[in-house]
View (cartoon, rainbow, N blue to C red):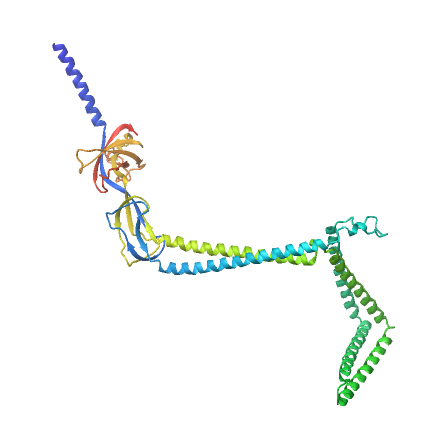
Length: 440
């Protein structure tokens, strides 16, 4: 019996020692419950016309907190709406113009295609200078060649004009050009005098008018005869010969250019006819106007949408569920964009920050569970979870050399506490007991 009693005492002692060791291994600390706080500020500047909350009010995400004056934006919206209406009307007009131009183009093209003699070239005999039949080259190829010839002829014409100008600078040629000018002036004067004389014929009691006109005509005729004689006498000079040759080259080059244009116009039949090309250009212009009108409508709509967005931002709303902790705004105040005027605290989850000495720092890990208690609920505990561990000491001298000094070094530990039932409030003092080795 004594032996059994001794064994029981030893077992009880071991268990008691074990329990005492577990209690001594628990890490305890105290802190204060905090809420996640968000500073609320308006995105736009303006005068406050309504504040919907006071400190202590609970709010849901999206609830209105305050509203700014919208009178200025309402005026701007009216202007933007008018601009959009005008742009929309212009777009409708541009659409109608485009439809009309397209219809006209279709009509002109249909008529041009109907009038085009597409098979005529099949019946034409090939010229003796050509080895290929008339229809051999496509119309597009012929049009391209005609355009090349026009460009060449235009360059040749400009070259001959320059050559005539250079020849005219020589002494002999310059003298002949002056004689030519006088002949041209005399011819023009003679033609005018003849017209005036003819207009005096048949006028009743117009003897004096007719006599004066006849005298003017006779004088012009004499001047023309003299100018013509001077011209004829000058034709034998080298300067005259050079000018006449140069004039002939200019005239031939000019005729080459216009003949090339005629050839091109002859080829421009059917869809290549000038009327079809002009109709197509009208369609292109109408389409460009339509696209521009579309852009104007898009810009006007964007301006209106921007004002609507700004008006929506005049109502400041709660970004999350929580409690209004601070209100520092009143109706009538003029706020600047970004100015904090309200603070909302998120009550679930809450957080608590405690500090532990360096000697117990190694016993704490992220995700570790802890038991939290508050004085307001002495018979109830709450579960907390370690969410952050500071990586450097706080409230300690910069240089701690002694063992005793190192033991006073503390580290911040932040924990998250669920508060679904809302019992815990920011500012409550809390005691935390860490469950060493226990993680979520």
